[in-house]
Image (tube, rainbow, N blue to C red):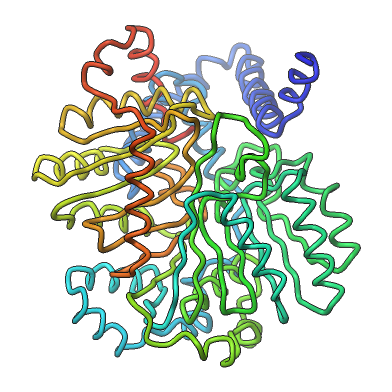
Length: 510
């Protein structure tokens, strides 16, 4: 059993990726070492290159934590630091068709209804600036006529998802970061094949590394043979490349243009607790019906690389699918975040909620890897008297990420932020609620990868009644969680503190 587990680990995508990267780095080192008598000249040239790159990186418009990390690497590894930075930066680029800002025709289909914005201003004026930002720079409008339903567990979401998929008549779009064989995949495969044979346009997109290079072909051959269109986003390529860092971390299911599911749940059995990996798995999601689903349809087709207006309009919801959804409570603004521009929409949405909160901020996140800006925002909110509470996992899926999180615990608890760990196991939910009035539910973690490197998505909810359900679920989860105190942070071993501090320096690259 242990041998099987070891072989499985060695053959995993992550292991293969690391091994191939190490081989490339070793090749670079051997190339430098083989220069013989010319070594000192090359060494001097590399030092000059490192100095130039350090100046360039310092003045580059990138997150300060990312810049500092690379300067540290260049300082520690003068021979390879600068070369590695250049090698990573000179890489393949994504097609322009998946960058919303480059698609004028597509942007014309995401037009903000001015009347809706006026109604939002009257109903919740404190949220107006956030809605303007997401509409203006995230390029996704806010909608009035939409209904939202919240799922506090992945198994509840999956049960409802299957029921809704059975009703599909025109098309089904699915997008996941991780897909693994098991009960969920078997149920979904049977359903999707049946729908495809009935004439429904079924499209399934999954990430090349999240799903894994060994899982990215075999499980999907049967689907494709039976009419389901499958697409690997950014396939795994064993090359040192910045593009390999830009993963599709989104989880979306769109049904006929009028219903969508979005949250943290992937298509794997641990997400619905049919397989135990890190104790009880706590995840959340929302189902949205109505006009707001159009934003998700556009963002899906962007990554599918079918951005023409004529293609998109084919998948607009039919009037009969929206006729019963009128004059609902609250406002919904789905949005996506792309690493292809310099606009970290997801992070700035979170920052706006935190900075403008007057009484409370409730956050659930599996990873707490924060830069100075986010740490200061959370700490300043607590110092102002805002009740800031964050729930993270007690049983982590990545030990090194957990060590970095504890490094952040120490700083945050000193400033008055209340940190809790979900003791039954692993909390994978990504939610943020401010004052019980504005909330975000989606795929965006509180870490560098989600803020800057991944394709992400979520929905901002303004004054929706469902926010009350999210807050109630947060309070129920708190009762199953352990408060982390300053004394807990101080009592950790010197080794763990040092390891967390060192890992934190390289957090932007993890």
